[in-house]
Image: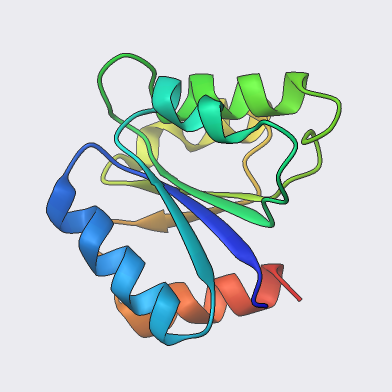
Amino acid sequence: MGKTILIVDDFESSLNILEKSLEKAGYQVLKSGDGQEALTHFDGRDIDLVITDLNMPNMDGISLVKAIRANTEYKFTPVILLTTKSNQQEQAKEAGVTSFMQKPFQVEALLANVRKIVR
């Protein structure tokens, strides 16, 4: 079985692009529409990577990263933050983000980043 990646974005089209690209590359994918919903996946299952958008309703990407880092079972789970805003990178780094990617992104660049992080 491939590694499991949780993708979090409030735009269905973004989720679908990410899901198809990651599954084609051999990864298992879990999806959530916001950070609050994403936290329901942290229930003892293996999650090898989280790819999250920054701006979402209910719980944004930085708050999600902080919640993941506060969970002892998942505090070392790598997180890629997708954002259109470069001015929040310092705040995201402080929260514990592993890597950043600017939106819009090239699928191949995202997959290269994923392969580098998830081995």
